[in-house]
Image (cartoon, rainbow over all chains, first blue to last red; front, top):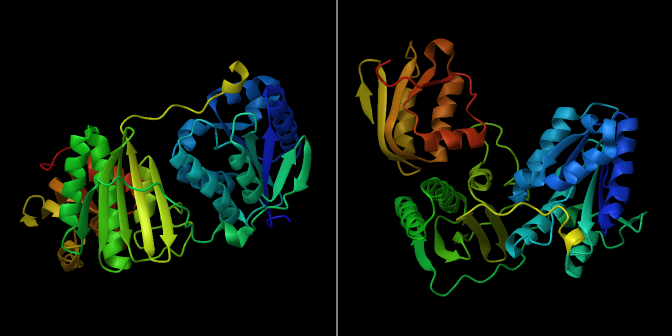
Length: 322
Length: 102
């Protein structure tokens, strides 16, 4: 089943030549049809593709996934910009995006998987375009490859493209996300807050961030993001909430729980139109390295992750040297 | 929130969040029939949440260029949030980098 005008395809590949066989003809076909083509890949794969494409390379747009998708929630807005800025009536578009690589930490990986599902919601029913998502089956764990069969309407495997019988469909792709989060440590610092406690929320995050060695810029980012999420709890999430703060493997994590629910699955990745639009979650994603949102029967959990140091770039050909 | 005489406008100090933003919005509304640019000194503003930024942007959107909002001493933190929200280019909003004495 096609997702209306949006065709979301997973490409399973193993090795460099397999990758090129799956991507280069796809790019060339787009160029022959005068379709705008954007490739969001690692810097190494971009230089390999440029070399393979030769004189066609300047007709293709490239972006580094390490910059675009370090926070997976930034990828939908990036594709949105591409489709809005380059889409013309009567001409489709095509893209290649590889957001998932083996070294992604678990919390990022699960958000990348959520991102893959949300693409179906963000672009289903809109302008016709095809997004090809390479998955390195030699490096990724089997459950990651299995999830790609559920988040993509089409799968290309051994160079054969077929509708995925496991695709969860557009509507389930946007259903409230209630997947588990790793449990907070027992010694996490906890604070309940209401409408009059936002200053205290900011103070706790600031002092915890400083004690954990975050730099001043990141402390300011985390304080502003935590303040907006706590403000959401006060204004839309039942009037109060609970905040936990802890340190984990080079990150400072702020978790806000309240009794509200997020109805809009794209709430954190829709660019605010103007001063009347909701924008707390959007801002949190702009300021934090990772934002995890879960909606359970009992309420909502928003987890903000600020890493002490920037993460490493996605690998180019790690599997080729292994 | 203090009134400034030269240039005619206001100085915001301390922290703005949903607990006090209504006060700021009301003061801005009181300037609805102000016939000149409104100068706001933000150099001593320690924190401003999205609701505060919203109020400033909403004011700027309703005024024409002769009555634009001129922000002085915009703290880099608030500028970063304004950029992240994509509201830096709001019509009626001007940023003065040359100090409050301008």
